Length: 111
Length: 115
Image (cartoon, rainbow over all chains, first blue to last red; front, side, top):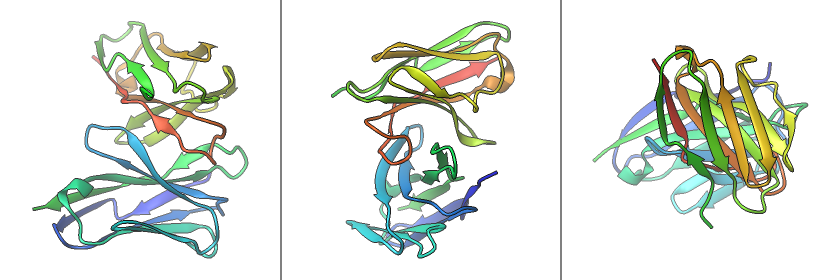
């Protein structure tokens, strides 16, 4: 079946360092969404990308959708302790339209 | 707006007992989703409703799980009988107009522990 994988699974960084998580789908996606889940919290929508090669920025966060629309990345510049959490990408199932969530990348930031 | 509301926030029960989880979606949202999150399986969609009608329940693990949405402002997920492997965090989410093209707003979740 369709899979959405993310790497790395875990990332520990020193505050101020950059962080990148990569999302790879086994099928082409019409769009991709990114969510953040704080420890003990619930997923919160960050952004949606639709166009091939699209790049969007939110302050220190940069999101990119691959040219083939099968991969995406989230880059955080100069991490802060408030960035701690698990970042999920999610894309539509290829024939049911359900949202398939990636495996997630858990980010820990040390002060 | 109050956001998606779920109750209870925590539930501890013994194997074999019936468990009912409740959700109130954001007013005006046409779609309601039930997800389960575990370390092993991640975030899985169990079932979703459109305008109170169940559309896709292919993610429901087995007959012990059932979900209803009697009106636009209320949904339940029931497990009967519960088993230890059902222990997980169950999230309810809602969206305005779409399944995978619209933002999904998640509730705080119900952490279920089955002993």
